[in-house]
Image 1: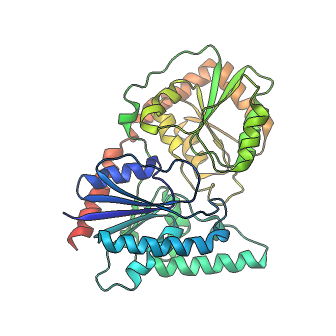
Image 2 (image 1 turned 60 degrees about the vertical axis):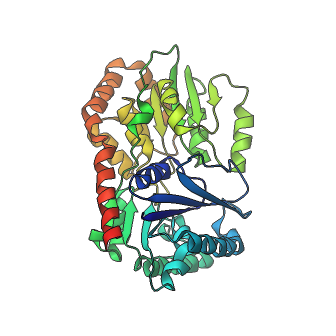
Length: 376
């Protein structure tokens, strides 16, 4: 039977779990993940061979884990030689670099699937610092070179190709896979009335400034705020501690997506998805919360001047606010809370666009591309 090996920088997130579940239907699947010394260390799937490689490193700073990265590269190459995969599926540029010896110096190299859920910040920003400018140049050169050996590029936003990869990747090697939810995880979902209007941020917690703005925007109105997710940022621990006595702010921490996501969304009236729009990647990325909000028929609040806002406003499924404005966010929340006609109109627009949440269609496209890689 054919073999696919996933090489990941951490335990599979919900998006990569969907890829693994799909791969299992047509091949043997194995997962090599980098355990940097924090968080959960197990991946629970009896049908997948799981190989965690424990090498301590700073998850938040890629420049300070260079030596650890080469150690992980060496041990990954050892494991790949044992597995002998037909296809290697990586996420992030860092992991493409990690597996590069396996396709640069092998005559019978495996096919390479490179998945990009976010463009690298160092390659997207206009840096004033000379050192960062040099790093940006080197990263772009390296990625262009490595992408010559990539057989399939998966992007979670079509803008990634238009803005960046179009310069050096052929369109026929690119597949758009929006980060849509597995509807099975929402089979028990039911909208429920709540005694208090509740807005929630669901998923990996980054951009703490925007999380702080959410708290400040709701501090004088009768609204509950839910943060459902975890982060490796140490600053967030202080953020939690600072607001731990506020009964209107709930922190759930890490959760099991398939088991808990339906219940989490049942507890919300509105979804918060505002990120730092000064960040070039944020301006063109599409988070899974877009699709989850549509499916759960919940208004979504997003940042202005982003591709996400463009789609949200076009479909009429939410509102856009300045990413750094407490007042704009507060006004938007108050309107969603108090203007029932406005709220219901957004819910109806979510219903009208619900048919677009069709993961099977995209999964079939991916399966077809994988099978072609196996055959060639």
